[in-house]
Image 1 (cartoon, rainbow, N blue to C red):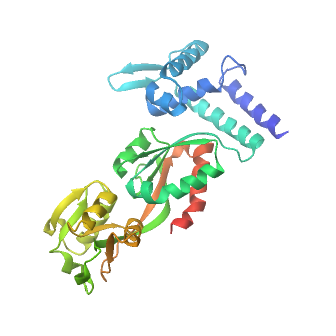
Image 2 (image 1 turned 90 degrees about the vertical axis):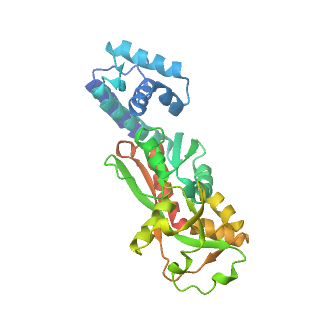
Image 3 (image 1 turned 135 degrees about the vertical axis):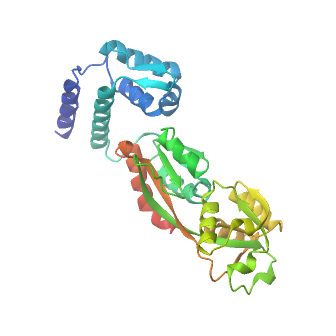
Length: 319
């Protein structure tokens, strides 16, 4: 009965657009069309759908022949879509089909999900979570892309990733961001730095050599925010190296090139391995959150909504 009602609604949605429910115009054509609109590229759409670019082109051509209209054109700004109504209706139809599949298959979710993540989440938060998620949803094919927060958010806005995990929320109005984990920064020093045991304030460390992250790093921005609040300036520090990954920073500190500030997730692991020492500084307290973001118009897609829901439930283990 549920299946009949769902399929009936799906057919009515087709009818609103003047389409017939028949094999010559099927869901793979709509999925191709929607993904080309969202990514602005036949090539990127092909990557998302795990098919060849000629296959995407053929599906779009079939749609154009069926609807007797040109759906895309190229201009100086790139690819332009002439099928706004088709796009809106296609989103409705694909959403309804997701509901049909969920009603028939229960909790089974399948498809492809491309994640974008900044360095700390990708190295310290996501690995155990992704293992658990894959065990629960083996039919979802996961792909992970890693870069700085700004780049990851750009990927999300350009629709080359489906979900973003970053150290700062995305500020764009078309993006939804939710906090999933908490973290704090720690000052680390070489493991044999006994002389650092009786510190009373962060200012006592200002004359030391420092290893810092690149300007685009969430850790760097959080550290600079702390210094600003204290009336201090990063330019006062003697910077012996500027590095682009947390692991490189830890290795540099381990080699006695200076002090640094890193995520507690990374610092505690390195300290357990005897690589560095976490320095207790009474007035140094920098807390932050990690966020999961997706585009508002994609939040109800079954693979994305299931992933976010699973991550929210799992995130208590990160805290």
